Length: 140
Image (cartoon, rainbow, N blue to C red; front, side, top):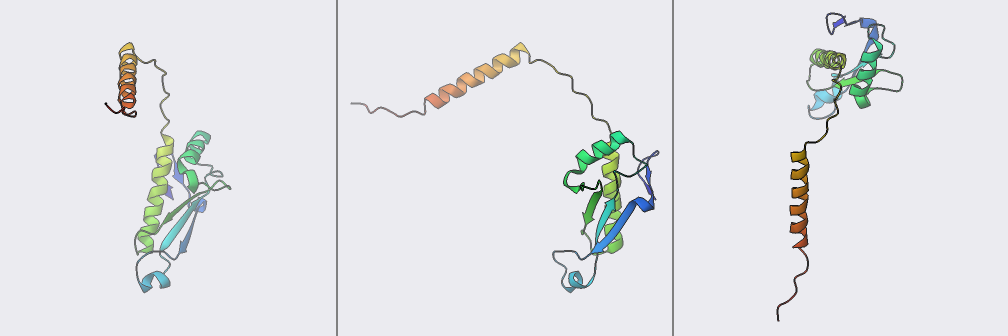
């Protein structure tokens, strides 16, 4: 069982772990031992997550969200299988925790008169700089 917040816990049956061989340096250890972990969480079918959190989680997960509605997290940071497993579970919990925070609604504001004037003077100055870059006529 993975505790995310006080109200959200993920059951073990919702998580699937698969151990694969890691890439990168490590000598023959890389070729022999499957230390990298691929943690799969069936988020779309999870009864423990409300709909709003699932929607935010989908947006936050990005490419890690599959077409089947699962979040896949891959970790091959350490040479220890158990440590990689803990890191993957921690990353999943952090991702879900981030999805629980509702974003603030943006209040539309208008630019102030001073900021409009600053923008126009900056544009004018930039235009003058660019106009001075033109071809130079030779003096007789």
